[in-house]
Image 1: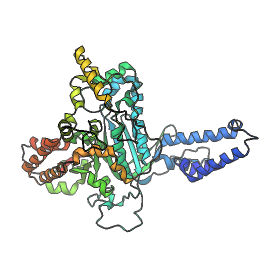
Image 2 (image 1 turned 45 degrees about the vertical axis):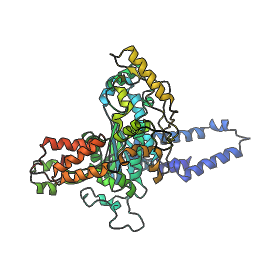
Image 3 (image 1 turned 180 degrees about the vertical axis):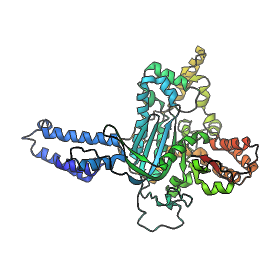
Image 4 (image 1 turned 180 degrees about the horizontal axis):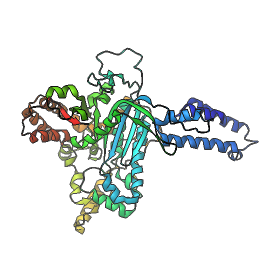
Length: 532
């Protein structure tokens, strides 16, 4: 028991995965087997010592859930000082750490709360289960649950890799990131790649509607599905912001209520990036500080969307271009483009393990989800209201196992009976052609491998963006022209991208150009100005 407490004090959150704890369990099993004739397992389970050890393990689990990654030092220090009467010390200073911060927010959460009422907690906790389990499987830690938002972190390395790096290697950080010390950030264990992969996997899992509405009260479920019936995409939609920087972790509160948290501008940056996803029409935005920590292959998979100048409150009112460039903090923002709907479209000839394809299907593959049968169906049907089987999101997928997540529908209020019968028949015929796709949430930590980016499902959600090899270069050409004040050419580039597929960033820039009648303002400096 003393050994167990010692391990708990040294590593409050991860002691169960240490070799010492595994050896401790093994020795306990050996002793039980040695004396099983004298002391059967049922007898040992009833002993006070066994009960106390089980209680200690439960307390450790509760501390891990309650304090999170930011509370490791708080738990350790107070356990070490446990001999004192007052074991909760709040006078200790916080400690500086380098982290990747993922801030994610549930879209239209107010509508969900209004529709679900008391069942909104079950709905939110299912979303949290998806976000937390996937991030944990790739080395992340849940820090805060803020109603409709979640903050997760990946602890970065404090020292550079042992081997000497090339001075020109972009892995070492951006020279533009002067204010937050980003040149001191190191991800020698692929923390940034794991964080990005977590967002991709979460985005896939969110498309399994049954998991989130299964078990709901029928009236609440119908209210939610009716409320969201006109919105494209899955029932649960989220925005993600990824940023890397330094923060101070510590305890905030009193003896009666204590929160372990991170305090930093870096946390605010991740929240700012998430809120900006709505402006650019993408689910994910990454800062250049995070982008520079990615593996070179993953950097090539990302798209630069814009370059910003962040102005503080004291810089408000600046209009001189030179003052803006000198005073503001510069940040380039990126995204990882995903077409999740592609996982549920009819299989085309060049797809993995595909059997057949036709011209109409290939056109849908080229021009995106807006032309898919799922979108057409929404013009006649409200979201499904009955569910016969529970679909569980999983990170272990197979290209031979598929299922359209929209398994049943209810008619709109003004739909006729014949319309409903035709719709149900059409959906039934489509579903009978596809086997069931079984998916399960991860329960433990996974070994990261760069080949994860070559999985069939990830290749499918990327194919529509990279197949013709022209969307990304054309967008970058338009962005370069926009920043160089050649807005006429930029407009042509963004319009071309939109002719290929619906693209939120291109629409954003076309809106800005139209707002100024195609003429750059006199004080335009090639950056988008954002007030902090």
